[in-house]
Each structure stands twice: as C-alpha cells, then as structure tokens.
Amino acid sequence: MGQIRLDINGPKNPNTVGRDIFVFFLFNDGIVIPYGSQKYSDYLIAQNPEYYANANITSMYWLTTEKADDKCATDDSSARGAMCAARVLEEDAMNY
Image 1 (tube, one colour):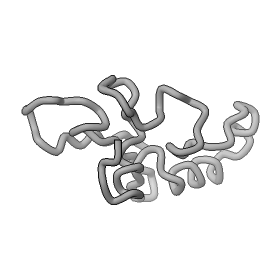
Image 2: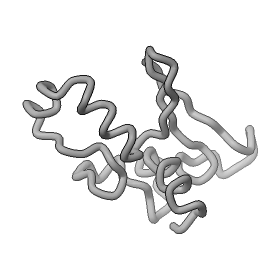
Image 3: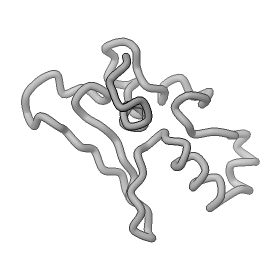
Image 4: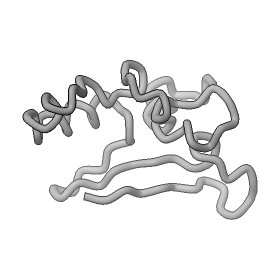
C-alpha cells in the first residue's frame, strides 16, 4: 500500500494539501481510493477489523472522523487538508 499525492497545478502556488494537492491511497490489490472517503474507511476496517477496534477508530471518513487534523480543511492550514480529495469527489465541488 502506498500514498499518492496529486498536485493538480504543478509547482504553482498555493501548493497546499486540500487546495491543489490531493491524497489518494493505492492498495496491494490495485485499488486506488481517495483518502478519507467512506470507501476508504470501509476498506481499511474490513481489512483489519481487530486493529481498528483496538485503536477505537470507527471511521476514517472525512465527514465523521474524530481525527481533526485529517478532516478536510476549512482554513488555509496545509496540515488539515488530507481528506479533501474525498470531499471534493463526493460533493462534486470545492465547498470549503
């Protein structure tokens, strides 16, 4: 499994995760899923339910996660936009 960061405008600014850089995961079975999507959350939990139960994580979905640093940003902080690819694809727009 690996992380893919897609910069949609190359070296031009703002170079901010959630604004022009979006995060996806590539899994060993060839599936590519936007980080923070419901499908991502379901996939991880299904692959390793004991780990996520022990870690007390019930969701890795951008809308319901308790991990505030992962939620799609509503500000300009690049550290908070990791799950924005999922939000943009789900809402079919940048509504933040």
